[in-house]
Each structure stands twice: as C-alpha cells, then as structure tokens.
Length: 366
Image (cartoon, rainbow, N blue to C red; front, side, top):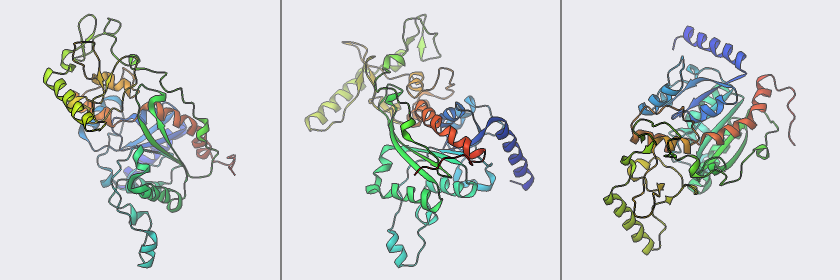
C-alpha cells in the first residue's frame, strides 16, 4: 500500500470514528458473527480479514463495505491495517511449540511473544495489538484452549497479552445456552489498554433452557413463507432432502449401539422441540448426527436446515445464505453465537468509550 493510500484510509477511519463513537477490526472474521455483535453496540467496522472464499462470499453478501475482506492475515502488514479502537478475533487455536522460559533464559534466548507464538495465528493478533495499541480487544476460542497442552498454551497467550503487550485481561467460559437452544461453551478473552472497572458480574445471562429448539425450528404450519429449497409448499414444510435416508439412519443407530456396548458415549443426538441441542460443529454437513430432529414414531429424523442453523447461532432471518448447504453448515458450525458476544460487548462498551474519549475519568480498580 502506498503512503498516500494509507494516509487516506487513516483519515477516513478517523472521520467515521468521530461520527460513530468507536471503530473495530474483524480478524478471522468467518461470516461476521463478532461484527454483528459489535455493530449492535454502535461500532463501525474499519477492516476485515477472512481467508476462506466461501466465507468471504457470505460475509460480502451481508455487509456492504467500501473495503472488501482482506485475505490471509499472515500476509497483511500491520501498518496496512487502519487505526482502530477495538480488535475482534476468533482466532483458530493452532498448537503452540512452547519451551520453558527458564530453559530459554539458560540458553540466552528470547522468550517474548515473537519467539513463543511465531508460527501460530495468535502471533498475528499479537503483532497487530503491538503495532496499533487499540483501546480494547475481544478474543474468542474453544473452551479447550484453557486446558490445551496442560494449560501451557493459555499461559503463553495470557503472558503475551499481559506482560509483553501490557493489557489488562479478563477471561471467562460462557455457554451460549443462556441465549440459544444449544450447549456451546466458548472461552472469551477481554483486554483493555488501561485498568478499567470491567467486571463479568455485569453480564446479564438469561437462565439456561429459557429458549428451546421450538423457537428456532421451522413451524411447518404456514406461519412463515417458504424459503428456497429449505421449506416448500403453502405450509412451508421442511424439504424431504433433509430427512435421513434409511441407510444413513441405520448406520448411525448401529454405530451408537456398537459404542454403547463398549461403554463409550459416542452416538447421535436425537432432539425434539422442547430440547436443547448439542454443539453445532463444522462437520454437521457429513451426517448431521450431533443434532437430529425427531419427526415422530416410525419416521426417520432430519437434519436442521441451514436457516435453522443460522437461528441456532443467533442470526436473524434477514441474514443472507448465498452458499451451498455444505458450505453453510461449515460456516455456522464455525461461527460464534452472536447474542453471547453482543452481551459481552455491551458491558465492554462504556469502558471502550471512556478510553476513546480520553480515559481521564476511569476509576481504577484495587
């Protein structure tokens, strides 16, 4: 990027930021779940990075920007990213190669983030935080990040954020079941450039189970209009294409019986309208086994439709799904549950705004 283009981008970013309060960048953006949450509290997206072309297609269909999604973040220079107040990243958790700090000290080697996180995608989050020093960040990952490699991976991440980069950091595992009918635990890491009175106690989490699958399933009674190949006819009945074949249904039952006999817990998840589903995964397109909708005695169960998957992740029915079912299942299985992060960002917002406007009135916590 030329110096002039970089300057113009910075000027445009600053102007928009002045109008809208704060701006953010969306890294490892997927289909934009974190962005939807941030926009709901008044943020403006200044930059997006997502490498998958199918996810880019869905993202572009739903967010009309003057900046198309950049590709692989590992190939983007930090100085080519606009200044921003908030960094969002649902970074993939690649295994870290971690050598003990004491051993590195004994060898006279560096043990900073560039050494310990190089070769992982977290390194790209760290280098951008180091370069731009945004007021805040929000990172998301699977629950097991906390225990990966006996906790050493998470230790490196926290040490990098706190000691190497100087951020004040909070983290919490949150189950999306508070907001959607799905058991989906994810670790949320929040950081601020200065000490602010942030507290997880400010979260408003509805009781688990308050929302059930009936709230996201197609009603099949004519109360919603048919949509594409998902639902058909005057009653908008779910297409037969989502019903499991006799062969697949027999295979899944036999597989479950085999593992049950061996004392294992593997098997399909058969659920009805009054239930809460297992975690939707990116492999859902293969056989749908983790969430199968019971259609009654003597009838084969069915998969969720992509629209139902969107609802299960907290996306509204206005969310455009421009890709094949296979790609849609992968995208929603990899997405964040939008309402969880809308709530996290709600309690982050006053602290972001305090830092953006100067931070002189911030009350330091003991």
